[in-house]
Length: 238
Image (cartoon, rainbow, N blue to C red; front, top):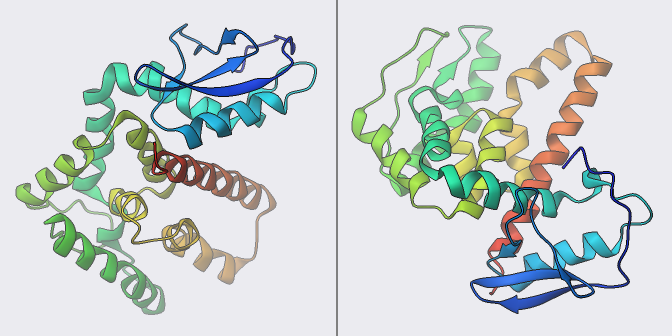
């Protein structure tokens, strides 16, 4: 979508129920994805949010101001058509999850990690049937195959739209457990961002803030919140 140079030509953007879900219309023209597929989403709330993004456009269309549209396009054009590949890439995080690798030192950092991360690993054990081993340092630890499979099963059970949101949760946080915890309501997005940045925040406390790193972190936080908003809309009644 970043290559678009189209200008607004419509008067009103609306959401309409259609076969297989809800679509978005610009006057009498149905919105399509970049791959020319009809943009059909699973619920009215998401369709209305996408229609609002189109309605807010003035002059040249700005895709960066349309996060729900971009996420829906990704779900339809990319995730749905290569679901097993995308799910497999995300599930692979379970074999080397961030939460399993603790600092060798200082001890205060290791304790801070344990205080935030152990409850999430306990949750994964109880609710996902996926106990994971913890270690110190970066030397890989082989996780129980049953646990890795349970996490993979949890990922593969999702819809293409849910998987699109999870893709961002996991990619930004570096943890499949964190991503699934947000998906299942165990963590708020703010909590998820905080627990995923324990190491970074420790470094900031020791050495101060780096302007470029802070700007990059803010962009990741915005993307994470956008993915969560997408997830909330998916979960709305159809």
